[in-house]
Image (tube, rainbow, N blue to C red):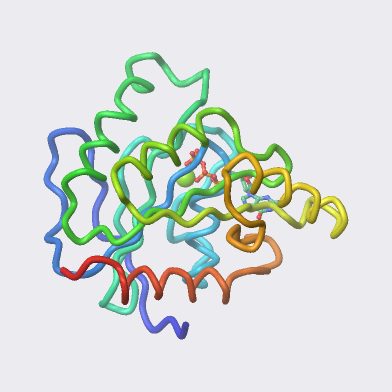
Length: 198
Ligand SMILES: Nc1nc2c(ncn2[C@@H]2O[C@H](COP(=O)(O)OP(=O)(O)OP(=O)(O)O)[C@@H](O)[C@H]2O)c(=O)[nH]1
Ligand SMILES: [Mg+2]
């Protein structure tokens, strides 16, 4: 996809209003520090657009980015980071659950898994929760630059088995090398075009 513009629109905290739902939207979810913000930056070819950090749990708000003035990409707060204060941690699910349940223009959620770790119990419960909600989910494995091709094939097989899907249904990705970017955009455009109409 040719990126002509990418802009930060708004950070939403509990009780805040979401931006108007006038464009189709795809959200990105995953463990703290898994690489959600880096993946979004890679997708839109802008290094510093979504804030990334080496201190996990940084993104505690829902962050909206408008791409090509036609689609929202949404960076969701990470889950499962123990050092985030209890208060903040508790907020993750109500905020995100409310968002996923009520956001009319949300066409699908990209669930990002660390290729070096594989799906964690929290990843699996998020995916199950999305399935129960009938929310289209796309599974991607990031940081694949850290694994050999052989290891990657093995990791994909194991993850697919845990998720009861085919290995081909998992999109491998690297924010460092850009591998998988084109394929992930294709999947995202697919979400936007064929999932529930606005
Ligand atoms: N090797 C490698 N490192 C990555 C990749 N993507 C992200 N990282 C690193 O992982 C760390 C976390 O990346 P972020 O994009 O901030 O992760 P996040 O999921 O947005 O983190 P929170 O917002 O804190 O939940 C950073 O140090 C990144 O450089 C990747 O594809 N390969
Ligand atoms: Mg982040």
